[in-house]
Length: 349
Ligand code: TXA
Ligand code: MG
Image (cartoon, rainbow, N blue to C red; front, side, top):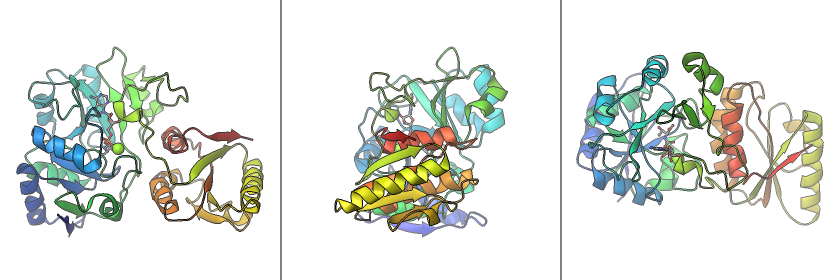
């Protein structure tokens, strides 16, 4: 099988083409599609066989539950017996958008979709192509990120093609995504709403709407005994081919330290890669450097992170040194993904 690729303009959606994609999903096939966060690998969420196909295509452990994507609030009632008041408030403020909520599930949701859990993750994305596709598919699309398990999430159709083109029926190419990091996950099965995965919507924003919000202690911890509640956050998500080391501290010190470590590596016969910014790229020696964008443009940093990590897998470097990106709004989400890719190898200077 080789995936059929259809190109859709988000400003002028070809509904006929998406109807074909929707038919594939209704028949139990797999279609990758853009959302505002990352590309998703869609299958019919109510069809256990489709869920199994998703796990197989990604090479993903089947105890790692999928997010069910919906296009309207009516659909939520099919998935969960009760929507807590706070969740309804959050939905009103942030859906459609880069937010996933966890609820108690109804019997309508197959255990194959929820990885055997009695809860279900639900998201209403804001990307117009995603919304149109969900409607065309009958309303319930299970979609993990459209990467092979263990690779960075895809932020453009090319990434999906690299990983999955031989294993799925169709790729809807809607261009590059806007955010570039996966949705914020908030668990409403707990007494206090709890962030299971940081994303574009941060704790401050959620607290404005909900009041008290907790952060799952498992998500930023280096201690493997503190297990994250979201099964997918327990896996070492993405290990670049090269070893990744994050260097954190004031800019001058970070630049000095990375130059020092990279020179040392090259003197020993190795090749060093550097993830830096437009402001600092001119301050490094002759190593393989890639700028993630301007340091002040945190949305750009988030959008470019996974693509840069993928690019480095094509280079012959043994170690990648990355500056840290503790930016004001999305810093926690960016550093969560970067530190996971680094297996928490971080040097403070
Ligand atoms: O932005 C996103 O959320 C993207 C796009 C495609 O919507 N999707 C995505 O899916 O990132 P995935 O499968 O790569 O990540 C889903 C995460 C996993 O960490 C999974 O363990 C967690 O959500 N999850 C799903 N259902 C859950 C549940 N019932 N309880 C706890 N965690 C759950
Ligand atoms: Mg994923």
